[in-house]
Image (cartoon, rainbow, N blue to C red):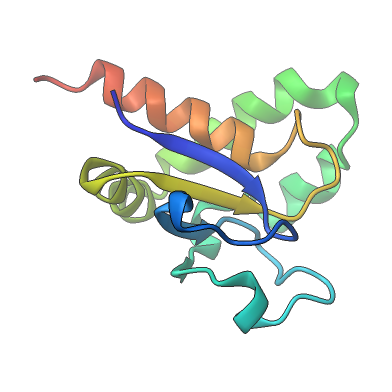
Length: 122
């Protein structure tokens, strides 16, 4: 099973994080590149601006956000392939800046990637 973690980009980086990928469309406020210590900023794996603004971290919109975001990810095969390849090499940590730690794009993306890995032929 792949080891895909999620972490707020504002938390200190750790050697246990493995490959750190920022999956926000916008660079996190007040965060320097040095402090973020992201190995990659993959904007293409983030929700579109339209979807992000529509969702607005409203818990009532979470299920619909997940459905729409999955559709957007399906349309970004290169970004998804890069993340799946990274997960195959070792621990992958998806970095996000949202305050909501249970309903954000990194949570949704992790679930999407794990489902893709589970359905892949062995």
